[in-house]
Amino acid sequence: MSDKDELAALKKKVEELEAKVSPPKSTFVPMTDAEHRDMVHQMNERRMSLASNFHPDDLRAMEAACPTPMMKEIALRDARAPTGRPGMIPNSQQASSGGGAAPVNKSGWVDAAPIGPPPGIDLIDRAVNAALPHGPEWGKQAEKKE
Image 1: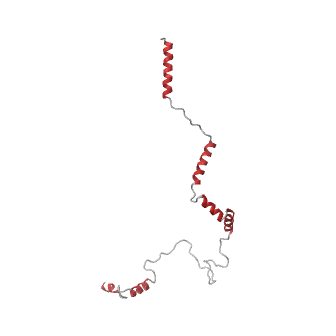
Image 2: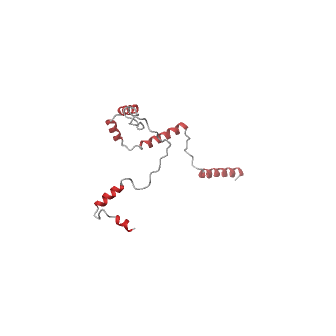
Image 3: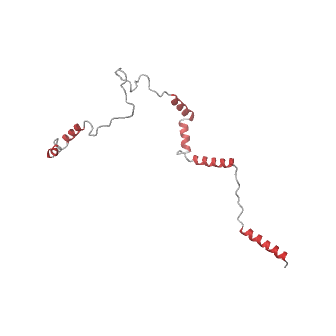
């Protein structure tokens, strides 16, 4: 065997070995920006089609009960409705005695409410104590012992 034949045989063997260990050819095809946007848009549309809590039959029944043009008319009418108070009803700041509005503190400061039982609780306590089987004098004996 000559050197040329041996070299050709070795080259052939190297090519065969490289073909065995070479990675598989990729099937990846790059997509354009427009194709990618379209794919993402379709994915979002599929996801949002599942976001409603209503079955399509329910939506059709709602549309039959109150058609979309009627809903638009109601919304438009409500949007144009006056939101202020009618002129016959006085504002809460106007004095009904006709003497003009009292000065109002608009600083946001409010005096603290005193800590203690609410007014009238003593009347409720007396009524409850009188109605209970232990009698109206219950609780007063504990005060006398102290």
